[in-house]
Length: 246
Ligand code: PXP
Image (cartoon, rainbow, N blue to C red):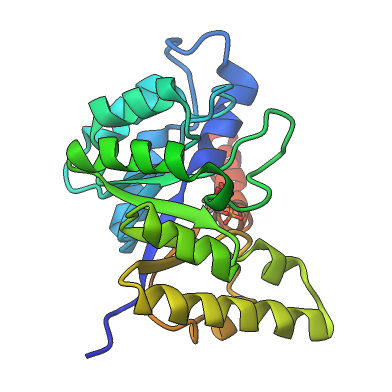
């Protein structure tokens, strides 16, 4: 039986907007937008999970956000983390449903390439075991590269999240090549017993071909959904203000 594809919504950008105005006064009475309202909206719309990334530099999601989202009943929380002792400690203490390990560079605007599992096998094996011992399922965000898929199975991850950014950014024939890499990686991962997820740069326009990735269970989408929320919601917000002014 084909399982329904699941959607995890990455709400980091809601925190980005909040931090742009209120990073110095996080406890002020007028802080907005509310991350918890965003969680509630995603849940009301039928999202299967919520994803947040606690970056080492805390540029968007804060430690208090992780605890607050974890405390919302009924939320399946996926916490993205870099593999550093401080952040793995927080993850083990918070007990999200899953952790997705991602590479992290201070200068990057967003997660750039996939995690190099191959080059960091022993460190990733150790953190994976720690997280799993705390009852957390572990996902690794990797490029659709056969060597990285094989290494993900060796470190005993539960899942991989295939990085769809190269596919999303490619045009013409190059996009077909990237899609084939994703398909092959999905097939390989499924055969190795790994759950297959995918994310980065996914939009309603580029989604359809991705649905053919073998064994695909979940998509994680952030930027497009928050962008669409602005497009869909700005009219209503302006109207609401004009009514208040009248
Ligand atoms: N998956 C992972 C591991 C990510 O790091 C990100 C970006 O934060 C996403 C999915 C979502 O990507 P996008 O914001 O492009 O939809």
